[in-house]
Every structure is written in C-alpha cells, then in structure tokens.
Length: 190
Length: 192
Image (cartoon, rainbow over all chains, first blue to last red):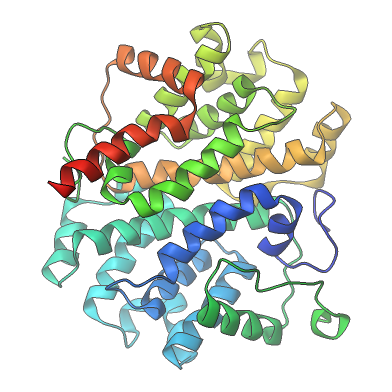
C-alpha cells in the first residue's frame, strides 16, 4: 500500500513518475544519458552497475527491472545474478570489477572511495569519464531506490513483468515510459 | 585532490558538473523544480530539508551551500539552519516541517524505513500528498548529490563567506541560471 495516493496499477518508479511528471522528466533524462546513450562502457556493463547498487540497497523493483535490462543487453541472466551475489567471481572484465568496487563504496558513502580504488580502475584501463559515470550511476541509484522505497510503491514479484520492462529499457532507453498503462491483473498476480 | 581531472577553480558539485555538462543539465533541472519550483512548501523549508539530509550524509559542500541558501530565504537566520542540522526537534519551525524532516531522515537511511505512521503524522499536521512526495524525492535526490560530490573527491572549501555569498545568489537567481555561467565558461574554454 503506497504512502500517498499514487495511480493504481503502476509499479515502482512508474507510479512516482505518473504522479509527478515535472520531476519525472529530468530523472528520465539522467537515466537515459547514464545508461543508454553511447559510452565506452557498454549498456550491459552500465546496467550491471545500476543493478548491483539497487541490489545492495535491497530495492526489489529497481534491481529486477535493471537486472532484466542488463540480461537483455548481455543475452545472459546468470551473470546478472552472479554480479548481485558475488561479482568478484562473475565472468565480467577486471575493469568492470574495479568499477563495481567504487560503485559499492559510493552506495555506502562517497567518502569511502579511495585514490587506491581509482588508481586500480585506471590501471585496468578505466578512463576519467568511466570513473565519473560509475560514481554518478551509483549515486543516482541511491536516489531512484530511495524514491521507489520511500513512497511505499507497489513492487510486484512477477518476473514476466520485469522481463517485458527490461526489453523495453534495453531497446528504447528511458525517455519514454516502459509502463504506459496500469499493469493488468494477470501480470500483477504474484 | 579530486579522484579525476575535474576543471580547477570550481568547488563541490560545480567541478563535477562542468566535467560532464550532459548530466549536469538534468541534475540542475531536477534541483530547480524541487527547491525553487511552485510548491506549498516555502523555498526556505525545502532548502532546510536538503540541508538536513546533506548534513546527515556529512557532505560539507552540500550542507554548507544549501544551508546558506536556506538562510538567505529565511531572513539570514543562520542560527535556525544550524539548529535544524544539530537537533531539528528543538528548532523554531512548524510541527508539519518537523514531521517531514522525520520522513526525510528515514529516506536518507533507507526508504523502506518510512512507515504509514510517519506519513499519517505528517498528514495530521497538514502535509499534502504532493508535499510528502516532494519531501521523499528531495531526501532521495540529496543522497545522490551528496554521494556524487563526495565520491569524486571534489574540493569542498571551509570558507563560510564563500557559501554565504553564493547562497544569496542561488536564492535570488535559482540553480539553472547560476549553473549556466560555469557550464558555459567551461564549454567556451574547451572550445579554445
């Protein structure tokens, strides 16, 4: 039961976005630039960072939808689960592992990021822009996760809904809603 | 010493924004709507929420600048801003704002800590759904801005006069207008 009168049938952040379109616009633009626009980090890698941070914040809606988007980009759902549970043993690049270490520290407190963490990422080929974007993706998901949880939004457990959202996010990005109308009862049953 | 090569002479979030103007635009647009857009919460009240969350996250740059903007909106009352940072329950602010600060403090830790009772308490004191929504989002957004500023190791000066002067300008002109000067200056410098 959401804390305020959010529109029925809109899960997670789509309810907050529908309730307040003025703030939804820059929040969508930010996610689109960070996760979808061209970047030397692949969209799959950036979705893994978003998924990892959302998982550490225990935000079910965000880790499920971004995990589904990552799985679409990477053609592999197993690696997504490994990144959530133990990214150090996941089949991802050493550079991405070093960026996930930075993201995990930002998730706790930005002040925990050390010059040694940044140097380690740089030695593995990370650029300043990639380090910047990793810090901002991690920081931004500390916002999105708190927004979704703090409003008490409806976060269904049905994997099929997240799979559909993930496909939309992977294909279209974040500017247009992935949930355009209330989710049907059949999908919401969980 | 910042962790990456941020443009010099721009402390706190300004250096980070000048480094990446593409993300600076939605970041500034969001803070502009939340803290300066039309709202039944005053600009001073909204800046106090931002200041309180930034103070709990121990982000010196953000709690100093937003504290200064709040003071500018509140007739220069810096003592009140300090009181909200240290113990808002004793501050000379409305019971409704205190109820919203309780919600903001929980969002700062974890959004799941906000209870129906917290929200009901705010509502009984006159808070609307939109005010509760915006309180949650201001608190969430400052968990982002704070981590962005700290995570890049930005320069965060101690000079209170610097924040006071800039706080007045932001209170007068807003975030987007004030940001254009350093975003444009940097783009101009990069073009040469």
